[in-house]
Amino acid sequence: MHRLLIVDDEELITDGLYDVFSRLMPDHLDVYKAYSGKEALEWMTRTRIDIILTDISMPGLTGLELIEEVQALWPHCKVVFLTGYDNFEYVYQAIQMNDVKYLLKTEGYDKVIETVKEIVEQLENVPLEEKAIQLTEEEKYAYELMAQSDFMRHVLQKSKSVCSDLTSLSQEFTHLSIPLDSNQDVYLVLGNLAYPKNTSYTERSQILYYVRTKWERHFSKQIKSVSIIDRYGGLVWFIQTIDGKQPTAEHLLDFLEGALEMIQEECLKLYNLTIQFTISNGLTNWQAVSNKYVLLRQLQQLKLDTSYPSIIKENNSDTEHTIGGLNTTPKMDILTAHLSSNRKEEFFAEFEDLTDSLDKASYHQVTEVYYSVALVLYVDISQNDLQSRITEFDKLLKIDRHESFKSSLSYLEQVANQLFDLKKTDDQDRASKVIDRVSHYIEHHLHEDLSLVRLAEIHYFNPSYLSHLFKQEKGINLSEYIDRYRIRQAKKYLKDPDLKIREVSEMVGYHSAHSFTRFFKKMTGQTPKEYRESLSNK
Image 1 (cartoon, rainbow, N blue to C red):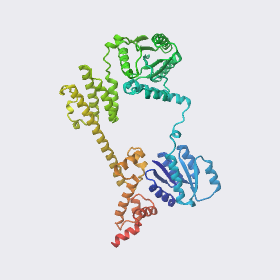
Image 2 (tube, rainbow, N blue to C red):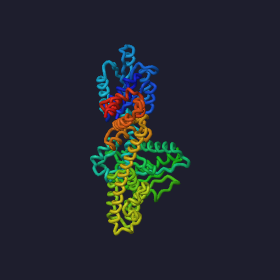
Image 3 (cartoon, helix red, strand yellow):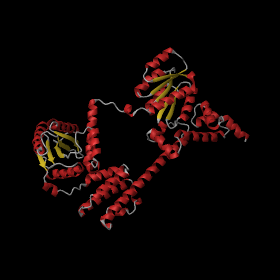
Protein backbone atom coordinates (compact mmCIF):
# COMPACT_ATOMS: atom_id res chain seq x y z
CA MET A 1 0.00 0.00 0.00
CA HIS A 2 1.31 3.46 -0.97
CA ARG A 3 0.97 6.62 1.14
CA LEU A 4 -0.35 9.91 -0.26
CA LEU A 5 0.02 13.22 1.60
CA ILE A 6 -2.17 16.17 0.54
CA VAL A 7 -0.85 19.62 1.55
CA ASP A 8 -2.68 22.94 1.06
CA ASP A 9 -3.33 25.92 3.32
CA GLU A 10 -6.87 26.17 1.87
CA GLU A 11 -8.87 23.88 4.13
CA LEU A 12 -11.70 23.41 1.63
CA ILE A 13 -9.34 22.09 -1.07
CA THR A 14 -7.36 19.87 1.33
CA ASP A 15 -10.47 18.28 2.84
CA GLY A 16 -12.09 17.85 -0.55
CA LEU A 17 -9.09 16.07 -2.06
CA TYR A 18 -8.68 14.00 1.10
CA ASP A 19 -12.29 12.78 0.87
CA VAL A 20 -11.92 11.97 -2.84
CA PHE A 21 -8.68 9.98 -2.52
CA SER A 22 -9.66 8.22 0.74
CA ARG A 23 -12.44 6.45 -1.15
CA LEU A 24 -10.84 6.24 -4.58
CA MET A 25 -8.30 3.42 -4.07
CA PRO A 26 -8.62 2.09 -0.49
CA ASP A 27 -6.56 -1.03 -1.26
CA HIS A 28 -3.74 0.96 -2.87
CA LEU A 29 -3.63 4.35 -1.13
CA ASP A 30 -3.36 5.32 2.52
CA VAL A 31 -4.20 9.06 2.54
CA TYR A 32 -3.06 11.84 4.91
CA LYS A 33 -3.56 15.61 4.92
CA ALA A 34 -1.75 18.69 6.22
CA TYR A 35 -2.73 22.37 6.19
CA SER A 36 0.81 23.77 6.11
CA GLY A 37 4.33 22.91 5.05
CA LYS A 38 5.36 22.58 8.70
CA GLU A 39 2.57 20.08 9.45
CA ALA A 40 3.51 18.15 6.28
CA LEU A 41 7.11 17.83 7.48
CA GLU A 42 5.88 16.42 10.78
CA TRP A 43 4.12 13.66 8.82
CA MET A 44 7.20 13.04 6.72
CA THR A 45 9.37 12.51 9.80
CA ARG A 46 6.84 10.05 11.28
CA THR A 47 6.32 7.76 8.30
CA ARG A 48 7.34 7.04 4.72
CA ILE A 49 5.40 9.05 2.13
CA ASP A 50 5.31 7.79 -1.47
CA ILE A 51 3.35 10.58 -3.17
CA ILE A 52 2.94 14.20 -2.09
CA LEU A 53 0.29 16.46 -3.62
CA THR A 54 1.08 20.01 -2.53
CA ASP A 55 0.23 23.63 -3.24
CA ILE A 56 3.25 25.67 -4.32
CA SER A 57 2.26 29.02 -2.81
CA MET A 58 1.67 28.64 0.93
CA PRO A 59 2.46 30.97 3.86
CA GLY A 60 5.48 30.05 5.97
CA LEU A 61 7.12 27.07 4.27
CA THR A 62 6.30 27.20 0.53
CA GLY A 63 5.67 24.09 -1.54
CA LEU A 64 9.05 24.45 -3.25
CA GLU A 65 10.86 24.72 0.10
CA LEU A 66 8.82 21.80 1.45
CA ILE A 67 9.82 19.52 -1.46
CA GLU A 68 13.51 20.26 -0.91
CA GLU A 69 13.09 18.97 2.66
CA VAL A 70 10.96 16.03 1.50
CA GLN A 71 13.45 14.84 -1.09
CA ALA A 72 16.18 14.89 1.55
CA LEU A 73 14.05 12.60 3.77
CA TRP A 74 12.40 10.41 1.12
CA PRO A 75 14.29 10.74 -2.18
CA HIS A 76 11.94 8.32 -3.97
CA CYS A 77 8.79 10.29 -3.08
CA LYS A 78 6.78 11.34 -6.17
CA VAL A 79 5.78 15.02 -6.21
CA VAL A 80 2.72 16.70 -7.75
CA PHE A 81 2.61 20.51 -7.47
CA LEU A 82 -0.88 21.98 -7.43
CA THR A 83 -1.44 25.72 -7.72
CA GLY A 84 -4.08 28.25 -8.65
CA TYR A 85 -1.54 30.52 -10.32
CA ASP A 86 -0.14 30.09 -13.79
CA ASN A 87 3.03 31.79 -12.60
CA PHE A 88 6.07 31.28 -14.83
CA GLU A 89 8.54 31.70 -11.96
CA TYR A 90 6.88 28.91 -9.96
CA VAL A 91 6.59 26.67 -13.00
CA TYR A 92 10.23 27.25 -13.90
CA GLN A 93 11.44 26.40 -10.37
CA ALA A 94 9.19 23.34 -10.23
CA ILE A 95 10.43 21.83 -13.48
CA GLN A 96 14.04 22.21 -12.32
CA MET A 97 13.34 19.60 -9.64
CA ASN A 98 13.73 15.90 -10.37
CA ASP A 99 10.69 13.70 -10.94
CA VAL A 100 7.89 16.26 -10.28
CA LYS A 101 4.58 17.05 -12.00
CA TYR A 102 2.87 20.45 -12.16
CA LEU A 103 -0.95 20.92 -12.29
CA LEU A 104 -3.21 23.96 -12.20
CA LYS A 105 -6.16 23.84 -9.80
CA THR A 106 -8.32 25.08 -12.66
CA GLU A 107 -7.77 21.74 -14.43
CA GLY A 108 -10.18 20.16 -11.92
CA TYR A 109 -10.32 17.03 -9.74
CA ASP A 110 -10.46 14.67 -12.73
CA LYS A 111 -6.98 15.70 -13.88
CA VAL A 112 -5.57 15.41 -10.37
CA ILE A 113 -7.13 11.96 -9.93
CA GLU A 114 -5.81 10.81 -13.29
CA THR A 115 -2.29 12.01 -12.42
CA VAL A 116 -2.23 10.26 -9.04
CA LYS A 117 -3.58 7.04 -10.58
CA GLU A 118 -0.78 7.13 -13.15
CA ILE A 119 1.82 7.54 -10.39
CA VAL A 120 0.35 4.65 -8.36
CA GLU A 121 0.45 2.45 -11.47
CA GLN A 122 4.10 3.43 -12.06
CA LEU A 123 5.00 2.62 -8.45
CA GLU A 124 3.35 -0.79 -8.66
CA ASN A 125 4.91 -1.69 -11.99
CA VAL A 126 8.51 -0.65 -11.46
CA PRO A 127 10.57 -3.54 -12.88
CA LEU A 128 12.25 -5.61 -10.20
CA GLU A 129 15.65 -4.98 -11.73
CA GLU A 130 15.14 -1.22 -11.24
CA LYS A 131 14.29 -1.80 -7.59
CA ALA A 132 17.43 -3.84 -7.04
CA ILE A 133 20.26 -2.18 -5.17
CA GLN A 134 23.06 -1.06 -7.43
CA LEU A 135 26.19 -2.60 -5.98
CA THR A 136 29.81 -1.63 -6.41
CA GLU A 137 32.23 -4.31 -7.60
CA GLU A 138 33.53 -4.78 -4.05
CA GLU A 139 29.99 -5.09 -2.71
CA LYS A 140 29.10 -7.57 -5.44
CA TYR A 141 32.14 -9.66 -4.53
CA ALA A 142 31.23 -9.56 -0.82
CA TYR A 143 27.63 -10.48 -1.61
CA GLU A 144 28.76 -13.32 -3.87
CA LEU A 145 30.98 -14.74 -1.12
CA MET A 146 28.13 -14.52 1.37
CA ALA A 147 25.69 -16.24 -1.01
CA GLN A 148 28.23 -18.97 -1.79
CA SER A 149 28.85 -19.56 1.91
CA ASP A 150 25.14 -19.77 2.72
CA PHE A 151 24.52 -22.32 -0.02
CA MET A 152 27.56 -24.48 0.79
CA ARG A 153 26.57 -24.50 4.48
CA HIS A 154 23.20 -25.80 3.30
CA VAL A 155 25.02 -28.54 1.34
CA LEU A 156 27.07 -29.38 4.43
CA GLN A 157 23.95 -29.83 6.56
CA LYS A 158 21.62 -31.55 4.10
CA SER A 159 23.66 -32.95 1.22
CA LYS A 160 21.42 -35.97 0.73
CA SER A 161 18.43 -33.85 -0.29
CA VAL A 162 20.21 -30.75 -1.65
CA CYS A 163 22.47 -32.79 -3.95
CA SER A 164 19.94 -35.41 -5.04
CA ASP A 165 19.50 -33.65 -8.40
CA LEU A 166 22.96 -32.99 -9.87
CA THR A 167 21.54 -30.86 -12.70
CA SER A 168 19.92 -28.49 -10.19
CA LEU A 169 23.14 -28.50 -8.17
CA SER A 170 25.11 -27.53 -11.27
CA GLN A 171 22.69 -24.67 -11.94
CA GLU A 172 23.14 -23.40 -8.38
CA PHE A 173 26.93 -23.54 -8.76
CA THR A 174 26.73 -21.55 -12.01
CA HIS A 175 24.30 -18.99 -10.60
CA LEU A 176 26.44 -18.41 -7.51
CA SER A 177 29.78 -18.52 -9.40
CA ILE A 178 30.91 -21.52 -7.34
CA PRO A 179 33.95 -22.97 -9.18
CA LEU A 180 33.04 -26.61 -8.50
CA ASP A 181 31.70 -29.41 -10.71
CA SER A 182 28.52 -31.20 -9.56
CA ASN A 183 29.53 -34.26 -11.63
CA GLN A 184 32.92 -34.57 -9.93
CA ASP A 185 33.42 -35.97 -6.41
CA VAL A 186 34.92 -33.71 -3.76
CA TYR A 187 37.56 -33.70 -0.99
CA LEU A 188 36.85 -32.10 2.38
CA VAL A 189 39.38 -30.33 4.61
CA LEU A 190 38.47 -28.98 8.05
CA GLY A 191 40.47 -26.23 9.73
CA ASN A 192 40.36 -25.61 13.48
CA LEU A 193 41.80 -22.24 14.57
CA ALA A 194 43.11 -22.02 18.13
CA TYR A 195 43.20 -18.25 18.62
CA PRO A 196 45.54 -16.63 21.14
CA LYS A 197 43.90 -15.59 24.41
CA ASN A 198 41.92 -12.31 24.48
CA THR A 199 41.61 -12.19 20.68
CA SER A 200 38.76 -9.80 19.84
CA TYR A 201 35.95 -10.53 17.39
CA THR A 202 37.42 -8.07 14.87
CA GLU A 203 40.85 -9.69 15.16
CA ARG A 204 39.34 -13.14 14.64
CA SER A 205 37.56 -11.90 11.52
CA GLN A 206 40.85 -10.52 10.19
CA ILE A 207 42.63 -13.81 10.89
CA LEU A 208 39.90 -15.82 9.14
CA TYR A 209 40.14 -13.50 6.15
CA TYR A 210 43.93 -13.92 6.10
CA VAL A 211 43.76 -17.73 6.22
CA ARG A 212 41.19 -17.90 3.42
CA THR A 213 43.15 -15.40 1.31
CA LYS A 214 46.38 -17.32 1.92
CA TRP A 215 44.69 -20.52 0.79
CA GLU A 216 43.53 -18.84 -2.44
CA ARG A 217 47.04 -17.57 -3.17
CA HIS A 218 48.62 -20.96 -2.59
CA PHE A 219 46.04 -23.14 -4.33
CA SER A 220 43.94 -21.16 -6.85
CA LYS A 221 46.06 -22.22 -9.85
CA GLN A 222 46.37 -25.89 -8.86
CA ILE A 223 42.89 -26.80 -7.55
CA LYS A 224 39.26 -25.69 -7.48
CA SER A 225 37.99 -24.90 -3.99
CA VAL A 226 35.39 -23.07 -1.92
CA SER A 227 35.72 -22.34 1.79
CA ILE A 228 33.03 -21.61 4.40
CA ILE A 229 32.90 -20.97 8.14
CA ASP A 230 30.88 -23.71 9.86
CA ARG A 231 28.58 -23.36 12.87
CA TYR A 232 31.49 -24.07 15.23
CA GLY A 233 33.61 -21.21 13.88
CA GLY A 234 35.95 -23.54 12.00
CA LEU A 235 36.79 -23.52 8.30
CA VAL A 236 35.64 -26.14 5.78
CA TRP A 237 37.07 -26.42 2.26
CA PHE A 238 35.42 -28.24 -0.64
CA ILE A 239 38.19 -29.25 -3.06
CA GLN A 240 38.39 -30.67 -6.57
CA THR A 241 41.30 -31.16 -8.96
CA ILE A 242 41.50 -29.36 -12.32
CA ASP A 243 41.42 -31.69 -15.33
CA GLY A 244 44.80 -31.99 -17.02
CA LYS A 245 46.69 -30.19 -14.26
CA GLN A 246 48.87 -31.22 -11.36
CA PRO A 247 48.17 -32.40 -8.74
CA THR A 248 46.06 -35.27 -10.03
CA ALA A 249 43.47 -36.89 -7.78
CA GLU A 250 46.06 -39.56 -6.80
CA HIS A 251 48.60 -36.96 -5.67
CA LEU A 252 46.22 -34.38 -4.17
CA LEU A 253 46.57 -35.51 -0.53
CA ASP A 254 50.37 -35.31 -0.65
CA PHE A 255 50.16 -31.89 -2.28
CA LEU A 256 47.68 -30.62 0.32
CA GLU A 257 49.73 -31.87 3.25
CA GLY A 258 52.82 -29.98 2.12
CA ALA A 259 50.95 -26.77 1.29
CA LEU A 260 48.94 -26.83 4.54
CA GLU A 261 52.14 -27.06 6.57
CA MET A 262 53.28 -23.84 4.90
CA ILE A 263 50.04 -22.07 5.86
CA GLN A 264 50.37 -23.33 9.45
CA GLU A 265 53.91 -21.94 9.71
CA GLU A 266 52.90 -18.53 8.36
CA CYS A 267 49.87 -18.28 10.68
CA LEU A 268 51.97 -19.20 13.70
CA LYS A 269 54.66 -16.69 12.83
CA LEU A 270 52.37 -13.79 11.89
CA TYR A 271 49.44 -14.17 14.32
CA ASN A 272 50.71 -16.67 16.91
CA LEU A 273 47.79 -18.75 15.61
CA THR A 274 47.78 -22.54 15.95
CA ILE A 275 45.75 -24.15 13.20
CA GLN A 276 44.93 -27.85 12.81
CA PHE A 277 43.75 -29.40 9.57
CA THR A 278 41.71 -32.59 9.19
CA ILE A 279 41.73 -34.14 5.72
CA SER A 280 39.34 -36.72 4.22
CA ASN A 281 40.97 -39.95 3.06
CA GLY A 282 39.57 -39.71 -0.46
CA LEU A 283 36.85 -38.43 -2.71
CA THR A 284 33.26 -38.14 -1.48
CA ASN A 285 30.17 -37.94 -3.69
CA TRP A 286 27.99 -34.87 -3.13
CA GLN A 287 25.10 -36.68 -1.42
CA ALA A 288 27.47 -38.15 1.20
CA VAL A 289 29.10 -34.80 2.08
CA SER A 290 27.07 -34.33 5.31
CA ASN A 291 28.06 -37.74 6.65
CA LYS A 292 31.69 -37.22 5.69
CA TYR A 293 31.72 -33.85 7.46
CA VAL A 294 30.28 -35.45 10.64
CA LEU A 295 32.96 -38.16 10.54
CA LEU A 296 35.76 -35.62 10.11
CA ARG A 297 34.36 -33.51 12.96
CA GLN A 298 34.30 -36.56 15.23
CA LEU A 299 37.85 -37.46 14.20
CA GLN A 300 38.98 -33.89 14.83
CA GLN A 301 37.42 -33.92 18.30
CA LEU A 302 39.03 -37.26 19.15
CA LYS A 303 42.55 -36.32 18.07
CA LEU A 304 42.66 -32.56 18.44
CA ASP A 305 45.53 -31.03 20.39
CA THR A 306 45.52 -27.24 20.23
CA SER A 307 49.01 -26.88 21.69
CA TYR A 308 50.72 -27.32 18.31
CA PRO A 309 49.84 -27.26 14.58
CA SER A 310 48.86 -30.66 13.24
CA ILE A 311 47.40 -32.35 10.18
CA ILE A 312 44.96 -35.17 10.95
CA LYS A 313 44.42 -37.60 8.09
CA GLU A 314 41.35 -39.81 8.05
CA ASN A 315 41.89 -43.53 7.47
CA ASN A 316 39.57 -46.53 7.26
CA SER A 317 40.00 -47.56 10.89
CA ASP A 318 38.89 -44.07 11.98
CA THR A 319 35.74 -44.45 9.90
CA GLU A 320 34.97 -47.84 11.47
CA HIS A 321 35.30 -46.57 15.04
CA THR A 322 33.33 -43.34 14.72
CA ILE A 323 29.63 -43.36 15.53
CA GLY A 324 27.69 -44.71 12.55
CA GLY A 325 27.07 -41.46 10.73
CA LEU A 326 24.48 -40.32 13.27
CA ASN A 327 25.06 -36.86 14.72
CA THR A 328 21.84 -35.46 16.14
CA THR A 329 23.04 -31.99 17.21
CA PRO A 330 22.81 -30.23 13.79
CA LYS A 331 19.49 -31.99 13.13
CA MET A 332 18.04 -30.80 16.44
CA ASP A 333 19.13 -27.22 15.68
CA ILE A 334 17.30 -27.39 12.35
CA LEU A 335 14.17 -28.92 13.92
CA THR A 336 14.17 -26.22 16.61
CA ALA A 337 14.45 -23.46 13.97
CA HIS A 338 11.55 -24.88 11.92
CA LEU A 339 9.41 -25.35 15.01
CA SER A 340 9.96 -21.85 16.40
CA SER A 341 9.23 -20.33 12.95
CA ASN A 342 6.09 -22.48 12.45
CA ARG A 343 7.49 -24.09 9.29
CA LYS A 344 5.47 -27.30 9.48
CA GLU A 345 6.37 -28.86 6.12
CA GLU A 346 10.09 -28.29 6.59
CA PHE A 347 9.96 -29.67 10.15
CA PHE A 348 8.35 -32.94 9.09
CA ALA A 349 10.63 -33.32 6.07
CA GLU A 350 13.61 -33.08 8.45
CA PHE A 351 11.90 -35.38 10.97
CA GLU A 352 11.24 -37.99 8.28
CA ASP A 353 14.84 -37.79 7.07
CA LEU A 354 16.00 -38.35 10.65
CA THR A 355 13.72 -41.32 11.34
CA ASP A 356 14.58 -42.93 7.99
CA SER A 357 18.21 -43.04 9.10
CA LEU A 358 17.25 -45.26 12.08
CA ASP A 359 16.48 -48.40 10.05
CA LYS A 360 19.76 -50.06 11.03
CA ALA A 361 20.49 -48.02 14.14
CA SER A 362 21.28 -49.52 17.54
CA TYR A 363 19.11 -49.27 20.64
CA HIS A 364 21.26 -46.48 22.05
CA GLN A 365 21.09 -44.49 18.83
CA VAL A 366 17.29 -44.71 18.63
CA THR A 367 17.03 -43.72 22.28
CA GLU A 368 19.32 -40.74 21.68
CA VAL A 369 17.21 -39.58 18.73
CA TYR A 370 13.93 -40.02 20.62
CA TYR A 371 15.03 -37.96 23.63
CA SER A 372 16.68 -35.31 21.42
CA VAL A 373 13.45 -34.72 19.47
CA ALA A 374 11.32 -35.00 22.61
CA LEU A 375 13.42 -32.29 24.27
CA VAL A 376 12.99 -29.97 21.28
CA LEU A 377 9.21 -30.41 21.52
CA TYR A 378 9.20 -30.14 25.31
CA VAL A 379 11.02 -26.78 25.27
CA ASP A 380 8.66 -25.30 22.66
CA ILE A 381 5.57 -26.57 24.48
CA SER A 382 6.81 -25.07 27.75
CA GLN A 383 7.70 -21.72 26.18
CA ASN A 384 4.16 -21.45 24.77
CA ASP A 385 2.54 -22.78 27.98
CA LEU A 386 0.72 -25.57 26.13
CA GLN A 387 1.40 -28.50 28.51
CA SER A 388 -2.26 -28.97 29.48
CA ARG A 389 -3.41 -28.93 25.83
CA ILE A 390 -1.08 -31.68 24.54
CA THR A 391 -2.54 -35.19 24.57
CA GLU A 392 -0.58 -37.54 26.92
CA PHE A 393 2.04 -34.87 27.55
CA ASP A 394 3.35 -36.86 30.54
CA LYS A 395 4.68 -39.55 28.14
CA LEU A 396 6.92 -37.13 26.24
CA LEU A 397 10.12 -37.66 28.25
CA LYS A 398 9.46 -41.35 29.04
CA ILE A 399 10.37 -43.69 26.20
CA ASP A 400 9.53 -46.74 28.34
CA ARG A 401 5.85 -45.71 28.26
CA HIS A 402 5.68 -46.74 24.60
CA GLU A 403 5.14 -50.29 23.33
CA SER A 404 7.81 -50.14 20.65
CA PHE A 405 10.33 -47.84 18.99
CA LYS A 406 7.93 -47.45 16.07
CA SER A 407 5.07 -46.35 18.32
CA SER A 408 7.36 -43.94 20.21
CA LEU A 409 8.33 -42.20 16.95
CA SER A 410 4.66 -42.08 15.88
CA TYR A 411 3.85 -40.45 19.21
CA LEU A 412 6.49 -37.75 18.62
CA GLU A 413 4.98 -37.08 15.20
CA GLN A 414 1.52 -36.80 16.77
CA VAL A 415 2.73 -34.33 19.42
CA ALA A 416 4.51 -32.21 16.81
CA ASN A 417 1.35 -32.08 14.66
CA GLN A 418 -0.73 -31.09 17.66
CA LEU A 419 1.79 -28.42 18.62
CA PHE A 420 1.80 -26.82 15.16
CA ASP A 421 -2.03 -26.80 15.08
CA LEU A 422 -2.31 -25.22 18.54
CA LYS A 423 0.22 -22.52 17.71
CA LYS A 424 -1.59 -21.72 14.46
CA THR A 425 -4.90 -21.37 16.33
CA ASP A 426 -3.26 -19.21 18.99
CA ASP A 427 -1.69 -16.97 16.32
CA GLN A 428 -5.13 -16.44 14.79
CA ASP A 429 -6.57 -15.69 18.22
CA ARG A 430 -3.77 -13.19 18.87
CA ALA A 431 -4.51 -11.47 15.54
CA SER A 432 -8.20 -11.22 16.48
CA LYS A 433 -7.28 -9.77 19.87
CA VAL A 434 -5.00 -7.17 18.26
CA ILE A 435 -7.76 -6.06 15.87
CA ASP A 436 -10.23 -6.00 18.77
CA ARG A 437 -7.85 -3.68 20.65
CA VAL A 438 -7.54 -1.43 17.60
CA SER A 439 -11.35 -1.33 17.19
CA HIS A 440 -11.79 -0.54 20.88
CA TYR A 441 -9.25 2.28 20.62
CA ILE A 442 -11.06 3.76 17.60
CA GLU A 443 -14.41 3.67 19.39
CA HIS A 444 -13.03 5.45 22.48
CA HIS A 445 -10.80 7.99 20.71
CA LEU A 446 -12.98 9.01 17.80
CA HIS A 447 -12.13 12.70 18.28
CA GLU A 448 -8.36 12.05 18.03
CA ASP A 449 -5.88 11.25 15.23
CA LEU A 450 -6.97 7.87 13.79
CA SER A 451 -4.57 7.72 10.87
CA LEU A 452 -3.11 4.32 9.98
CA VAL A 453 0.34 5.52 11.02
CA ARG A 454 -0.93 6.65 14.45
CA LEU A 455 -2.83 3.39 15.10
CA ALA A 456 0.24 1.41 14.04
CA GLU A 457 2.48 3.42 16.39
CA ILE A 458 0.18 2.82 19.35
CA HIS A 459 -0.12 -0.90 18.77
CA TYR A 460 3.51 -1.48 17.66
CA PHE A 461 2.68 -2.68 14.15
CA ASN A 462 3.98 -2.05 10.67
CA PRO A 463 1.27 0.23 9.13
CA SER A 464 0.88 -1.80 5.92
CA TYR A 465 0.66 -5.07 7.87
CA LEU A 466 -1.92 -3.60 10.27
CA SER A 467 -4.03 -2.48 7.30
CA HIS A 468 -3.81 -5.97 5.76
CA LEU A 469 -4.54 -7.72 9.07
CA PHE A 470 -7.52 -5.46 9.82
CA LYS A 471 -9.16 -6.19 6.46
CA GLN A 472 -8.43 -9.89 6.87
CA GLU A 473 -10.14 -9.96 10.28
CA LYS A 474 -13.00 -7.50 9.71
CA GLY A 475 -13.63 -7.92 5.99
CA ILE A 476 -13.49 -4.16 5.33
CA ASN A 477 -10.76 -1.53 5.09
CA LEU A 478 -9.69 0.24 8.27
CA SER A 479 -10.73 3.65 6.86
CA GLU A 480 -14.16 2.28 5.95
CA TYR A 481 -14.59 0.89 9.46
CA ILE A 482 -13.72 4.28 10.98
CA ASP A 483 -16.12 6.09 8.64
CA ARG A 484 -18.98 3.70 9.46
CA TYR A 485 -18.44 4.09 13.17
CA ARG A 486 -18.24 7.88 12.84
CA ILE A 487 -21.60 7.93 11.04
CA ARG A 488 -23.23 5.71 13.68
CA GLN A 489 -21.97 7.93 16.47
CA ALA A 490 -22.81 11.14 14.60
CA LYS A 491 -26.41 9.97 14.13
CA LYS A 492 -26.57 9.09 17.82
CA TYR A 493 -25.26 12.52 18.90
CA LEU A 494 -27.53 14.40 16.46
CA LYS A 495 -30.55 12.96 18.27
CA ASP A 496 -29.58 15.16 21.23
CA PRO A 497 -31.06 18.62 20.48
CA ASP A 498 -28.79 20.23 23.08
CA LEU A 499 -25.66 19.39 21.04
CA LYS A 500 -24.72 21.83 18.29
CA ILE A 501 -23.66 20.42 14.93
CA ARG A 502 -20.17 21.87 15.42
CA GLU A 503 -19.91 20.00 18.75
CA VAL A 504 -21.01 16.74 17.10
CA SER A 505 -18.42 17.38 14.39
CA GLU A 506 -15.63 17.66 17.01
CA MET A 507 -16.85 14.57 18.88
CA VAL A 508 -16.53 12.34 15.80
CA GLY A 509 -13.12 13.66 14.77
CA TYR A 510 -13.93 16.48 12.35
CA HIS A 511 -12.49 19.81 13.50
CA SER A 512 -14.10 21.60 10.58
CA ALA A 513 -17.93 21.71 10.50
CA HIS A 514 -17.76 22.15 6.73
CA SER A 515 -15.75 18.94 6.28
CA PHE A 516 -18.11 17.08 8.63
CA THR A 517 -21.15 18.25 6.63
CA ARG A 518 -19.64 17.08 3.36
CA PHE A 519 -18.64 13.72 4.91
CA PHE A 520 -22.09 13.18 6.47
CA LYS A 521 -23.93 13.98 3.24
CA LYS A 522 -21.69 11.68 1.22
CA MET A 523 -22.36 8.81 3.64
CA THR A 524 -26.12 9.37 4.22
CA GLY A 525 -27.40 11.57 1.38
CA GLN A 526 -28.39 14.28 3.91
CA THR A 527 -26.62 17.11 5.67
CA PRO A 528 -26.48 16.85 9.50
CA LYS A 529 -29.09 19.62 9.71
CA GLU A 530 -31.43 17.82 7.29
CA TYR A 531 -30.98 14.57 9.22
CA ARG A 532 -31.82 16.28 12.53
CA GLU A 533 -34.91 17.90 10.99
CA SER A 534 -36.06 14.54 9.62
CA LEU A 535 -35.88 13.14 13.17
CA SER A 536 -38.06 16.02 14.42
CA ASN A 537 -40.60 15.40 11.66
CA LYS A 538 -40.83 11.74 12.62
